[in-house]
Image (cartoon, rainbow, N blue to C red):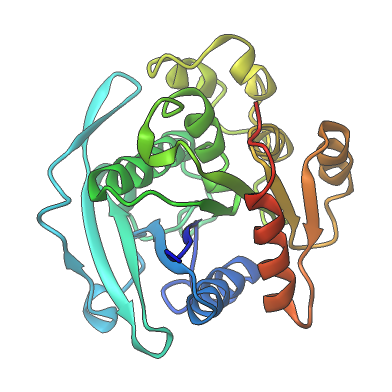
Length: 271
């Protein structure tokens, strides 16, 4: 039987960015699924504080060279890759001088939030999906971790819905309490409209707060994992929509995910 494929997309992964629940789960889950017979691919942003020499990142020339339009501006897409030897997996990095060169993840050293975090999320989400499409690697499951990936389910349902690479994929979104204060740029919905996504599809992010970005992801996902406890409002939202849900277990998480993925693969995809 052909191996099932899982595409993992995370805003942070240990050891490249450490000390967070997201980075820890996004590091251990692909390794364990790989060891249990799944074929996996892993993507994250190439934030400027990642030491390329220490982690031996190198550009994948055959995948780089595309341009993505974000807010009516052409932005070059650069793909880099590194290996986690002990995990026997590769991590692909989405890079761009404009969005990811700066030495900060979502804010500068003084704590001032980057005003273009919305565009960085658009670029990262589309960059991953365009790269996977170019690879011709069709995933069975696409599992997103962290608010920066919250646009991926929206794009899959509304922009790539006729793309054969993603036609059979079930989308999972993991909810964490690591977010941001206030709102992203309130023009986010208009920027997404440049890709032909508008109307009811983006109603939830007229005010793109952390909670609303998560709700948007849940609305377009097949399954939702609650990786931390302080997310009750989002849990209620997922249950009202009838999404398949799971709490991330502290112990025996491998068996729990194997069962969760198996259940999703026999369900109908979100309309």
